[in-house]
Length: 505
Image (cartoon, rainbow, N blue to C red; front, side, top):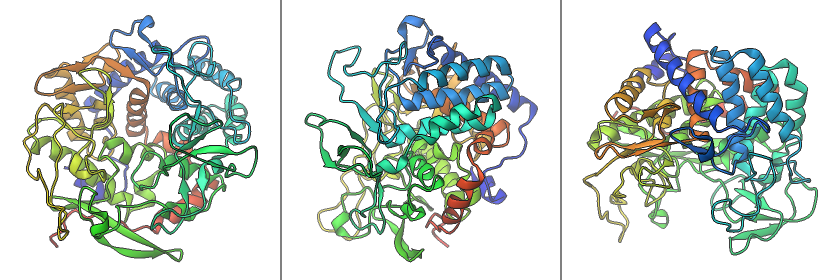
């Protein structure tokens, strides 16, 4: 159970015991092996993924800003946990920062494109494997994770402070912020990103750059308009830098609005409308048994908990994230039991049958067909109460071969460490989903089919979660400065989600 976190009132756990610490250090040391194996020593850029045997030739020929940011904060974690010494850490980060200073970027915003070669840093315009064209894209969320890594380096390594700060200060997150509210929302929010040139047949909106400089660009048609999303890291950064108003936190949906016009969403939400800074916000929530929580788009763990690696959301928002995070963990745990999997932790990852797939708890996601949790794609479809034609077609399904993703379990460390360690112990010992680089990316629990590869993003989430748990929220300490806290904390503190441990009260 995750109730202990609510008793503490924040995400800070009791000190880890000796056996727990030893186990987590072993996990971190092995995970670090995978990250070093996929990182080019000359450029300091990590590949996106590598096969489970860590063979150099199996590393992917592409990388992203997220991968680079994750490698940077993982290097700091490895240093602070004693896996590598300070000299090696500094040399690794120096190499990466030097390469970042040479990569092609969007001049008007300073933002990085989504795909580069890890071996020489050139911008990719075709996929290395297929030769298909790549339309160079600038992603708000991917640049957010790179900036997060740079902020950590700037604070953690004094010798690189100026270089890291120069890079992150040149990144203008205002370039993604659409000030015009969308739908029924009361405030503006971020677009997914933009292209400098028309992106083929992909939906795009031509508009002047939102930061007011440079030529027109081609924005994504979609906005990042859900609250529980990994994309909120970019919003936090832009608020912290003073580039966008703090009210942008209210430009996202907790759930879609109530009512039959929105009956396509997974559940009919409960909750009430509240006022913040003169703006009306529907504080919607979904339910799982007696629990109420704000859902993510797909019901995955990283949507809920990845930004929490850097911003102390549960501490700053005791009536919002301080409730929602541990309840989200509890929902994931219960789904593992209710579906008959015996294990839990559902988040986008490698597909054990090949490729990549989005996994989650379907009932806990806004998207009507959900991020599903088994290889059979079992879709839960319950009644949308009170709306004609919205009766559920599969309200009580039988689940099949569930797919658990270890990084999702690690993200829950600060909310239910005992359950996390028990779950991981079984994944390692009973399911055998562990190799030279730590936990393999995913495993189907009944068939035992394992995705025997490592993804840079997922491995860096594991490193960050272990570092925070063993070193008292170390990434948050490095990431948060006085300006960011002054601008961001008050707006998080005032939020009151409709999350609850018991809706029967």
